[in-house]
Length: 273
Image 1: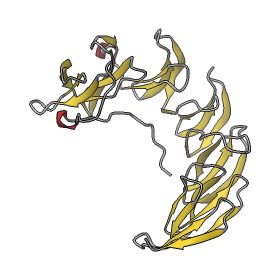
Image 2: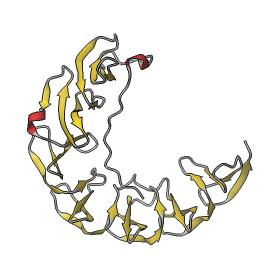
Image 3: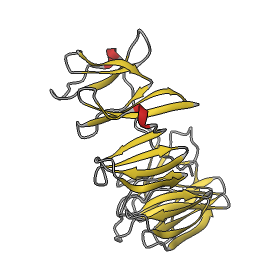
């Protein structure tokens, strides 16, 4: 299980602007002349000169995150639609993540520690964590002293620092709970948003629940379990797709033969297309 702290930094070349854009939208591009990122409008007019190492799209058509430097010394800032700095490079942030899924909170990092602030630049979560996730169902994973737990939006520890790795809570499932993957001793299980370990540490890999089922890996093979931990699709597959109403599985990754299951685990057909 890979726990990722996502940074939205998709960069586009000038030649790629063939899609129809909103008239008020400006988008990032990477200059062919200097290799830097700037911003242009739908008429290919440069609004912000290319000067950045990376740049994101504008969240809520309001702010974008930009960076300068390299992996050994990179600094982040936030600009508005005119290229003015809302958060400047001189404020010294090593990472900034704009998160509009939770009350416009902004993820920030300095000296290897993460926290959150709001658009008034008030610190909401102190910069005291080695990693910090997004808030889903009012909970975010946090890493402290090399262990993971979960905090709420006022920085109370609701699930103690006991895991080797942890993920964000996923979407609300049909049983009314959210679930997150947690890891101990290189095995992955699941907790719900009450902090209860509902599926023990059994799996080599595990993925988010979708409509009550999750893909997991055991003994080098994939299967599916439900939110109670019951095996719904057996561990005999090299690949499973769990994104729609029908679950698709292949016994060999390169095979063209697919097995189709309904969400109760009943085999409903096969295909060689």
